[in-house]
Amino acid sequence: MQILLRLAKLNESDDSLEKVSEFPVIVESLKCLCNIVFNSQMAQQLSLELNLAAKLCNLLKKCKDRKCISDIKCFDLRLLFLLSLLHTDIRSQLRYELQGLPLLTQILESAFSIKWTDEYESAIDRNGPPLSPQETDCAIEALKALFNVTVDSWKVHKESDSHQFRVMAAVLRHCLLIVGPTEDKTEELHSNAVNLLSNVPVSCLDVLICPLTHEETAQEATTLDELPSNKTAEKETVLKSSTVVYNGMNMEAIHVLLSFMEKRIDKGSSYREGLTPVLSLLTECSRAHRNIRKFLKDQVLPPLRDVTNRPEVGSTVRNKLVRLMTHVDLGVKQIAAEFLFVLCKERVDSLLKYTGYGNAAGLLAARGLLAGGRGDNWYSEDEDTDTEEYKNAKPNINLITGHLEEPMPNPIDEMTEEQKEYEAMKLVNMLDKLSREELLKPMGLKPDGTITPLEEALNQYSVIEETSSDTD
Figure 1 (cartoon, rainbow, N blue to C red):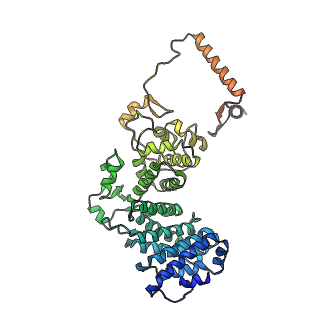
Figure 2: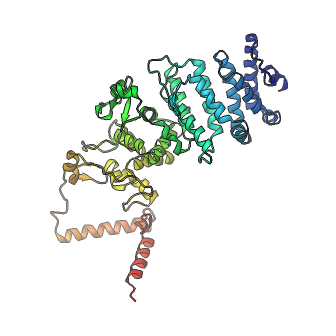
């Protein structure tokens, strides 16, 4: 370990990264240290005793703004990521003692060649070249290390922390708006940016959107009303050369997150690892920031016009998310349902309009809202407006399936009273048999909206009625 630390220039206190001939030795030494630390618990313990994290931060400072030694930065960052992954103590040391948050954020700024136009706004060169492979790899390693450093950062305690997180969120916004050397590398870069954004306190995510600059205002910005609504691919074509604008705010980063989410849904696998982070991020952004929620609502749940198909049938983002509401993975279906619920301002009637009662039953049962109502969070009181097509079709919409059904003939219309009574008793006996054999358990709604065995629900309602009927 000591030999490798010396060869990797981790024991040097002066600026000694001048001999280019030594760079390959430094890189290979860092690679060896990565392998040893990853595979040996004894090496992990020695890393603590040798204060390896501080040495790595010192080496990063030496090569922070030097493009020619990106390989050294890359493996320095990888080793820092491994140490912070394997030792929670090192996370705390990096965050507070070694000032890892601003240091790693500056590494990202350097990799992306960011030029600031305002405190939390950077200039985006839309016609610039993609990131080089070396810069992309450095950025990915820095994002992973930052994720470990900030993994417990749910609350901002100081104003300085809030500023640091806002700067980091602004850098991540820039990251979302640039591309890597290949499509796979771009997705990996954006995936790590999404993971890191999930650690940023939600109050600091307002920097993901920003007012239009004078240049953007002067250009012909594409507004939502001008976007094609039929195909996502067509939208992408329009958006490549234009700015996504909503209520005078630049929504490019949020649109990238939405497109990223849709791509992950279309993959059809690894939903828990690949999809839930971006869904959770969009949910929290929508809950805390009104403009983001309204933009996503317009994109995901536009006003209903055609209700002839079930909500889960089709290729729109709404159809894909509704299908996830009945996914076999509990975590996936919960976060998909929660996202749609937040877009509907946690109003049950609005959610049912877009999903149908059958798809939403799981969420409503878990939240105690089977009887209707709304969630606990406060949202603005602006009203949703229904289209004329929806208003005309509404009386014939099946509330369970959420789509338009032609009126069906009532099978009991032609029965005599005796036949109706016979069929009713037959149904009662069948249900009774299933209940006694415990194949079916009758359930009822408690006063708080949650489900419970029918006997218990009836008893609670009886107690309430007796209490309310008491007189002086």
